[in-house]
Amino acid sequence: MAGYSAKRAAAGVIAMKGRYTQRGAALMMVLLIVAIMVILAVGLTDGVRYSSQRLLNQRLMDQGYWYALGGERIAVFALEDSSGDPVSALNQDWARKDIVFPIEGGSIAGLITDEQACFNLNSLYRAEPATGAADDVTAAEQVFTALLENLEISPQRAEFIIGRTQDWIDEDFSPEGIYGAEDLTYTALDYPYLPPNGLLDSTSEMGLYAEFEEDEQKRIAPYVCALPEVNTAINVNTLALDKAALLAAAIGNIISVEQASAVLESRPENGWADVASFVTALNLASEETMPTTLLQGIGVKSHYFRGLADVFYEQRQMRLFSRLVVKNGKAIVYAREYGEVF
Image (cartoon, rainbow, N blue to C red):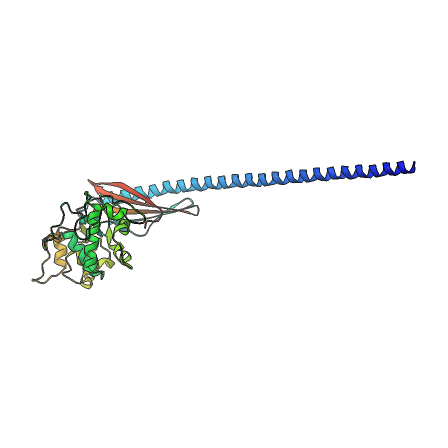
């Protein structure tokens, strides 16, 4: 009986240990399930929170975009108000630099710049290939070469950039001149691409074909632009004071950059009434004459402008760059760019 009792006691102990083991395993399983549920709940909560924040950001940026379009409309109205004036000058309302409109939750800052106060790279376009003759140099090529000379860039580099620009924008597929380059040149690169064979949309395209050296692009960029027309004039009424190098180049460097700077500083507040008044203000000596071909590239009225609507709304920023053309008294937006423009 004693042995039997001992066996029953041992069996009981074993049974109890089994029950405790099962309870421990069940407890571990419950804890594991709870942990998984917590992880899923946290993930779900974070997903909902991120989605909500993303939707909020999208809503606020959309609202900022509509505010930016409102700023663009203000630029349109300002340009149309002055479209009937015989000249475009820096004393007109569109040229103000202190325009800020308060809005609920932020502000809209506006700025309009004249895109004809620069050298239009598309004016280098040639309908016919160059003959190589000394007199076969277009007015635009003369101005660009003179500009680069004022920026201390060699005539050889100017000739190279001109040749590459002309082949980049012409319609054919055959290289022209000693510096010409077309499809075969660019498709042979490590990262191949094709030239557009059309007018430049942005001056940043120069980085694809000009093979800039050192800081050449940084020096040239402030003086050039890319307009959707070939024949555009440089507006001497809206040239900034620090663009004297371009003014001197536009008249064939018959005066120095320092003299051109003095001319800009003495410019009438409402600008020169016409090109003849500007030429008179140069006070050229009798033996100094301005080439007629260059006179055609100078004007006092602009049609192309660039507007910036810089919106700060609910601690977020939206920048909208609008390119506008004024024709027949109407300002038309023909291109938009967002964010930073390089």
